[in-house]
Length: 222
Ligand SMILES: CC(C)(COP(=O)(O)OP(=O)(O)OC[C@H]1O[C@@H](n2cnc3c(N)ncnc32)[C@H](O)[C@@H]1OP(=O)(O)O)[C@@H](O)C(=O)NCCC(=O)NCCS
Image 1 (cartoon, rainbow, N blue to C red):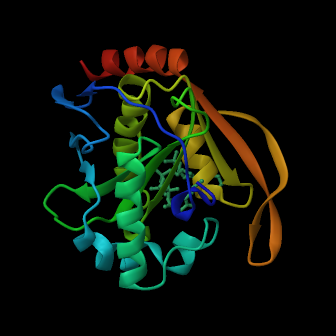
Image 2: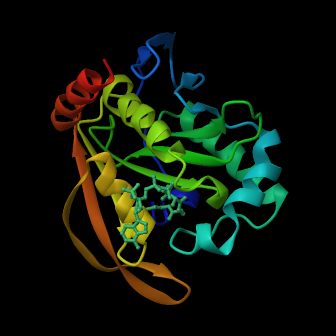
């Protein structure tokens, strides 16, 4: 959220995992540290970032409305290429995963979802997201978010998934509330943006709560 998208991460762990996408009932067996699974939802596919995504990500994520409450994104295609190469290194090290958001019928990435470990083994992790404003309010966020949260809890075995959103970020906080995150508190003056310290809300989802909520969603679908 906030600064997550374009900042550093560290740490590692190793194991082979079975990646499942409940949204589509497709199962991909993979070691996510070698390559991220492809997750197919009702509106978007989530997949590993490619260097060729750099131009579309620049167009989508460097706009004022998208970047206002997150760490400043790269400002050039080359800058995004360096970011994408960094995401591959961090994934290979087992510290972090960054998915490209690709709407069905398109090849270009229009946003990203990220998960990084806050402690070794991903027990506590932080997620973040940014989507091109042309796709706000379309359902793309919810479709992608469900798959990323499934990935965090089912594949990398996160127990507690945190997110931070600047209080002034109405859509960011609205999106987190809608996905079922719980606001635990306010992190006062915790995010430096444009020379000003902003308050952030701390939002969390626990694995057990997500699984209970998923059962309810599943029941609604059928
Ligand atoms: C965060 C983001 C991915 C969410 O995607 P989105 O498509 O805008 O999200 P949605 O429209 O599905 O959900 C946002 C919700 O917030 C609500 N909302 C919008 N403005 C709001 C405001 N000022 N206050 C409270 N809620 C607000 C929306 O009405 C919507 O809820 P609804 O569907 O029940 O009406 C997208 O807005 C984005 O990329 N923002 C820029 C990057 C960013 O800030 N990322 C970090 C977020 S912490």
